[in-house]
Image (cartoon, helix red, strand yellow):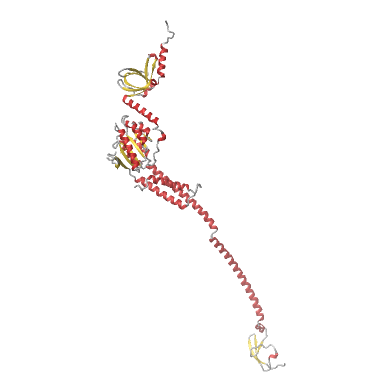
Length: 404
Length: 86
């Protein structure tokens, strides 16, 4: 009566293992329980049992995982994550742990991951919905505790970096059960203020460092929804560098700390002063270029104008006048010379005609008493008194005879 | 108060002024060359704006007010005195 199908133990165990491996829940299981029988072998691998009131489950942490997890002690309530599979040689199923936390934190962590996944799926964290933060804000809203270190850090940073900014604080409790509705109310009040009174450029939502539980308000769904609903962009600065909250994902900008949020929200006034200086310098160099260009244009025009200048005309005219007057002088001198020549020749002629010149050669001029020159015998009769003029004077004569 | 120009207003105007000066740069030959009188006016405006920016940067003091909700639901902002500093 041997049945037709007989399996070996290995075959059955392999089959059982295949069922575990193909099961989605078994491959990615979160479970809580109490640690017992914890041992770490010399190989570095850890073995323990997870148990609750009703059952036990063997668990293994491989050496590589053990190195990065904080290992539990017997009696600890923990949340463990890993794959449940079959250890064939031992005939056991067990949990291969890849994540392990104290139970309280583990529960929070689970919540965190679930909410984050849900809101991400809704598109609340989409980069496309993140709004830019103005480079030089006029007015900032701040949501944090009025008495916390976060506010002190923010105000100190703003005063040092960019005291030009106006700060509107909407105080809110940032820890405990009241914190989420308080933060939501503060964000809402600031948005109302921005609409009704004075516009806000950004809102800083901040809290100083603390434990995961301390920061938990920032993982509240209502807070993230209020951030997304805010018409004013929100910058978060929660906890320390390494802390990430859901609010950080929902925010328009995430800073690692409150001080970091103040830094991201404002420019540094020293840098601004430098860029104002830069602008002034470039205005200066521009006007310099303008002046140089205008000057060289002016120079060119002056030269062109100079070529047509009346001064030049006058100079030219003056030269012409000089030329002319020189020519006039020459002409005049020539004329004078020729006139003088002429005069000399005339005077020669005249002197040739001068009767006195004849007298000097021994001739005489005889005139009657009435002054008439005697040129003919008919003009005189014996007894007439005449005047004889010779070269050096005259004397009287009487006509003695007249033969005519 | 509200008629006073903010740093942002002044800074933007300074940037625009310098840009106008640059766009009318006779050495680049691009676009309209600014008449000298206009360029000088822009330069003077820019210098004034830079001085105003600097004096705002040097003289500013952080103003902090705290928002409170009145019983009637209205909002009020009162000067905020930080408890202890340091």
